[in-house]
Image 1: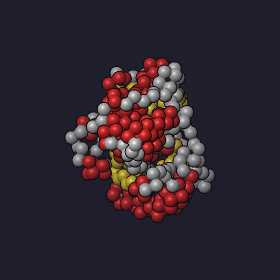
Image 2: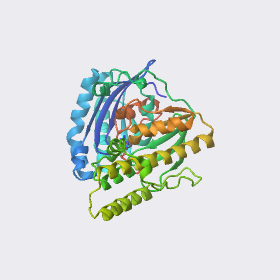
Image 3: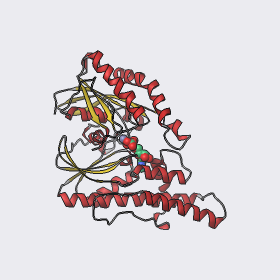
Image 4: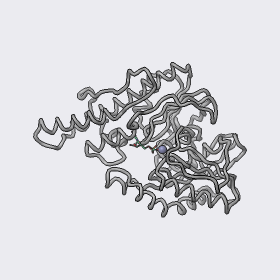
Length: 362
Ligand code: KG4
Ligand code: ZN
């Protein structure tokens, strides 16, 4: 762990442009500001992300977003100890916007620059203290939620399950900066599967929250879906077959009815079954990892960690302490998690040497 007390985090790996200021004290890691803008609504029109368009929007947003994060934090530039920035993995055009901006700010403000792996950053959302200064409080009014009153930080060893739009990974952390990759998806990520299935159901991007909403009134037992690799004996995943099955079922229902529109009930039942299948596969593999490595803590991270059925399923099955980020805004891409990871990093880099790496792995 380094001795920085105040870090500006910058995150632009996908379609978000995000900046946050976090402070570390004996009370824990607190958010002073947390700004996120996204071109997701633009991307919705196309059913997915168009990389060049995302990067153009990020170029417009990056400076105002950083300015607002600083203003909201009520700190001055002199108060910042360091800048942490995501340098990969992600879309190269998007990453470059954050990385190049952070390099320039590091040089002109004379602040150390901390490179953060986006995937590791996701896990550090679990170290952030829920609190009043946290922008999502104002949006969600969830102050009475128990997750906002308990601040228990993960300790080691711990199994991490990262479930996002681009990744599904199981990782064993034995300490900060010490981890071992245990397994991951061989094809589509869990979030990607949610997104692709949502598209087949005619739902907008991002599909995870849409499927989750639709599933509330659905009956998963009405439609059986395959659970790829659930009994493979390793800690790998595969979700592309699930999407293929959903596509075949959608076609079959449409043909049977001689109508290419699914009824609301068809959609609800399919959504419930998709969600239940993904949750079941993720839970079973996480349980296998817990057993194999004999740990008593698990943390989840990434956009799909916002899915309440996933945390419920894990909590019910695992019988170990489960950590999940205190709010959905800390599950999906954000800069607070990047700054939080910055406090535990042992690495700073010469700004002139930092390069974005779209293929960075764990
Ligand atoms: O972590 P994230 O913001 O971006 C990546 O780094 O990939 O994750 C985005 C993914 C999308 O696939 C989205 O559909 C999924 O997270 N997601 C959800 C939920 N909220 C977001 N999936 C299931 N249930 C949700 N509530
Ligand atoms: Zn992410």
